[in-house]
Amino acid sequence: MSAAPDMLFRIAALNAEYAAAIDDDRLEDWPAFFLDTCIYKITSADNLRERNEAGIVYADSRAMLADRVLALRRANIYERQMYRHIVGTPRLTGAQAPGITAETPFLVVRTMRDGRIDLFAAGRYRDRLHDDAGTLRFRERVVICDSSHFDTLVAIPL
Amino acid sequence: MSAAPDMLFRIAALNAEYAAAIDDDRLEDWPAFFLDTCIYKITSADNLRERNEAGIVYADSRAMLADRVLALRRANIYERQMYRHIVGTPRLTGAQAPGITAETPFLVVRTMRDGRIDLFAAGRYRDRLHDDAGTLRFRERVVICDSSHFDTLVAIPL
Amino acid sequence: MSAAPDMLFRIAALNAEYAAAIDDDRLEDWPAFFLDTCIYKITSADNLRERNEAGIVYADSRAMLADRVLALRRANIYERQMYRHIVGTPRLTGAQAPGITAETPFLVVRTMRDGRIDLFAAGRYRDRLHDDAGTLRFRERVVICDSSHFDTLVAIPL
Image (cartoon, rainbow over all chains, first blue to last red; front, side):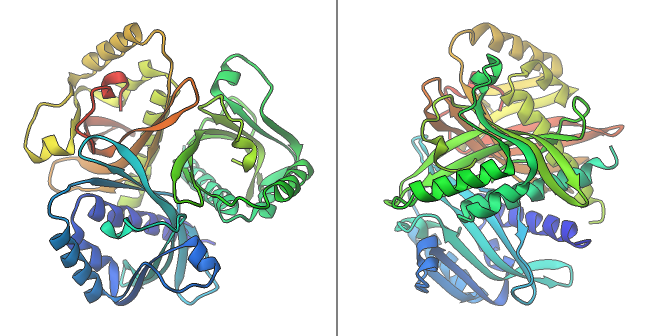
C-alpha cells in the first residue's frame, strides 16, 4: 500500500485534466488521454448487470475518438451549453486485472443558454490505466451511467 | 502540521470506499467502516443549531447498523434507484476532541428508473475517527443534512 | 513536477477551508483567504469569451470583501438558505503568469427552507495564489460561472 497514495493522486490529477479538456471545450485534446489502442465505452449500470455489452458509445482506438470529436464539431454548431464535471476521489480496485485499475464517481451538470442548470449525468468511471514513462493514459475507460436513458448523452464525451 | 496531508489523504480514501459500498449496493459492507461501539447519526443543520438531539437515524453500535441493513433489504425489494455520493475534500477540525476529527461536504444524487436525476441530499459529515492499526474506522459519524425535510432520507445510509 | 503534488494538495485544502467558511455561514472569515491587495471577481464564461470585463461582482482589496460581508449581513436577515460547495480537484495551470496559478471546478447546491434542493451555480475558479510564509492566500480569484444569468448569485460569496 506504500505506492497507493501517489498513484491515487496521479489518477485524480489525470481525471482533473480530462474533465477540464471536455468542459473547456478543448475536445481535440481528449483523445490524447488514451493509448493508441484503447477501449472507450459509455454504458449503464443496468447494461452491465445484464451483461448487455451494447454500450451507447464504443470506440477501440484513439483514431476513433478523434473521429468522434470531428463528428461532434460538425453536429454541435448552434446550441451552446456548458458542461461541468465534478469528479470524486478515485479508488484503486487493483489485483483483478493486469495493470492499474481504478473506479471513480462523477457527476456532470449542464448549464443551458437560458441559465437553467440541470443534472446531466451521474455514474462512475471504471478504468484501466497505463503508465507510459510517467504519463498516465487510459488503456480502457468504461463510463457507467446510473441512468439507462441516455439518448442525449452522446452530445459530449463523458 | 507535518502529518496532516497523509491523514487527510487517508480520510479521503476512506470516504471514497464508504461511498462506493453504498452506491454499489454493497450495504452489507457498510457497518465494517465503524467501530463495534460507535455513533452513527443522521440529523439536520437546524436540529444541530437548536440542540435538538433527535436525529432521524441513530445507532450506537455496529450491530445496530447491520440490523438497519437487514431492514433496508427487506423493505426495498422492488423500486430500484441508483444513488451517487460526491464527497468533497476533508478538513481536519482537530484539537477540540480526543482522536482524529474531520468535516467533509457531500452531495448525493439519485437516478430514478425513468432516467430522472435529482438532488437527494447535501450536507457535511462530522467525524471522529480511530486509527485501528493502520485501518481508519468511524468512532462517530454525524451526517448533517442541509435540509430538515428528510422523510425519505431513511432509504439508504448516507 | 516534483513539487506539484504537494502544492495541489495545499490548494485542495485551501479550497476546502474556503468553502466551509461560506457554507458554515462564517462569512467574516472569508476575507482572510485573500491578500490585502487582491482581486475577487465573479463573472461568466460568456463574459470572459467576449472579453467583457464587467464582472457582476468585483473587489480589489480585502477591505472591500469585508464591506461586502457587512452588506450581506444587513440584507439577508430573514430568509435562510443553506449553500453547499462541492469543489473538484485543482489543476496547476502555471507558467503563463508569475506565481502559482490554478483552476478548479466547483458546484454549489442550495437547500431552501421547504426542503427543495437546487443547483445554484457551476463553474470554475481561476486563481493566482501567494505563499505567505506557509499560508496560501488568493492574490486573485476569478469565479467563472457557467451561466450568464446570475441575478441572484450576489447572495453569497462563491
